[in-house]
Length: 179
Image 1 (cartoon, helix red, strand yellow):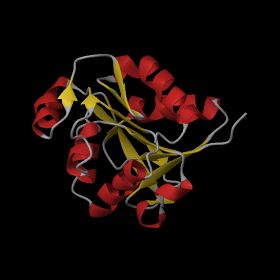
Image 2 (cartoon, one colour):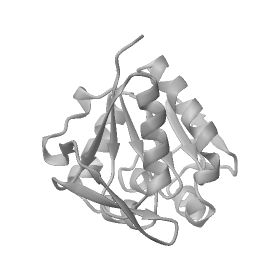
Image 3 (tube, rainbow, N blue to C red):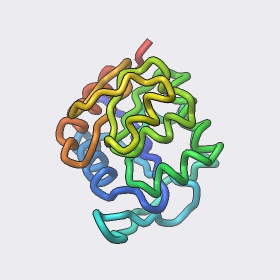
Image 4 (cartoon, rainbow, N blue to C red):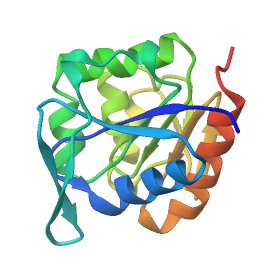
């Protein structure tokens, strides 16, 4: 079994299923999964229509380095990406994964962070329909599909796509760096 260390970057308001399901799926592979956030302590989830449970932060973003991780996961929710896309540390963390050609997986509204990190140009991607125009305006080739993979970047639309998203995410992480 290969040892991997995965970062899931999230802050208050992430969609719970979009963090919980990938985290559990990755841990079933025997991999270490760290929740990375802008602040220490806990981050509170959004569970469909109300606040959900809080999740323990394993690593504060200011001390996190992409070089210490094999891949990055970006859950959605409306609040979570909106906060992270305006945080320079978060954007630099994301850019570092792309510069190191490591796998990145983003679901639902999660790709909004990638827009502000300026890494979507020329990429085939999907997302929740509400941000499709934003992705196209940023230069992405947006398609309405369950899961899309483009050179190690895995994207999906909604929690209903989590089984396909989780499967492809694991495949890409097992492949490793994408030259």
